[in-house]
Image 1 (cartoon, rainbow over the protein chains, first blue to last red):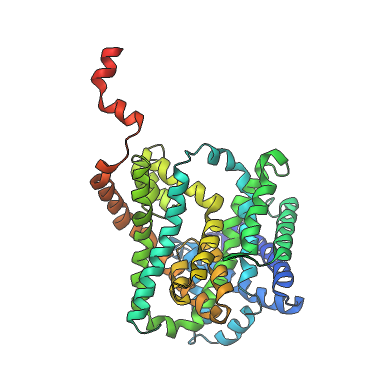
Image 2 (image 1 turned 135 degrees about the vertical axis):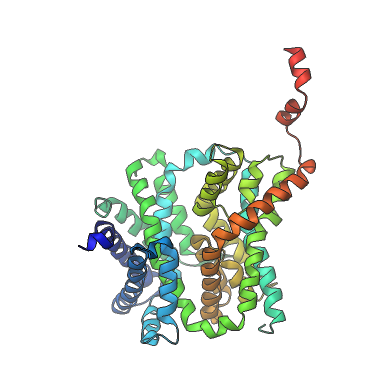
Length: 157
Length: 273
């Protein structure tokens, strides 16, 4: 019956892959941030739960018009916002996993997927490389410049 | 389900992560190197076809897992925003204004150089946006991927995948080290909408300003979310037309390549033929 509402096989796959990612993050949190196993597991479980709510939302009818990025982020923001019941506990738990160890698991898979893109990359004209560097630099720098100006005008900094 | 059971792949990922974290944060002068960067590089090295460690299927699996694994990082980013909503709403004006910087920044910095290097209509596809999946599909819809514009956006997409996070991480640590921007402005700048590039940048900035970690997470996270949500529409309705207009206006300054010269003088070629 649930299959009429969402794709349960896909949900199962995602939930298991996220468990693996969560465990990989715990490894990183222990080695990199020096946290202990219990704290890390508590923290990642809460982060996992928040992510799963977002994933489920993104798979429901009507709501699936918006991306999973939108739903996971939105629910995470709401769940940790001052007005949400239990948000203080959620934030405290999530804080047990530092930000820095959250990146490597995702990027590890991204790196491991690269091999098949290397042949295509080699075929690119060298000219696109400086352009790419400036594309990525440009969005960051102009964002920072405008932000600096804006925050000064608002008197925040 | 077999993707879940690809233990070889997950084991490699675990090894990559363990090594990355063991190396830890390293400073080379003004540059801060972090586990997230090592993870991409080590993962990439392992995946090189000549080492024959991973099959194409393994790499396809990794490709499929990446956006799913991202959800955990996204949740963490969102969780960093919620508690600071009052502070963020205070700067609501700047939060939205700096998005303009993000969206226009790619054109402002990259388009002139692309023209100087002699790139043709590829410039439009390459410089109108950050070149992530959503930007590729906009170009695919409008021009088709085999067009010049399509080649441009695909090239940037590939570059972003290969060295986007690495470059952003290194660049942001250099900029942070130069001490020209306030950490909050840097954090907003880091919220580009591409989560992997953003996470790398955030790590660098936090390494320089650990006392502001929470605010940095909040500002960068908020900017990321807004850039993601608004980004599709901004790209479709604002920056793509803008890139086209800029290209058409500035085309006369474009360095002409030998192919362009040939195309402009068809009579001579015909006579010789």
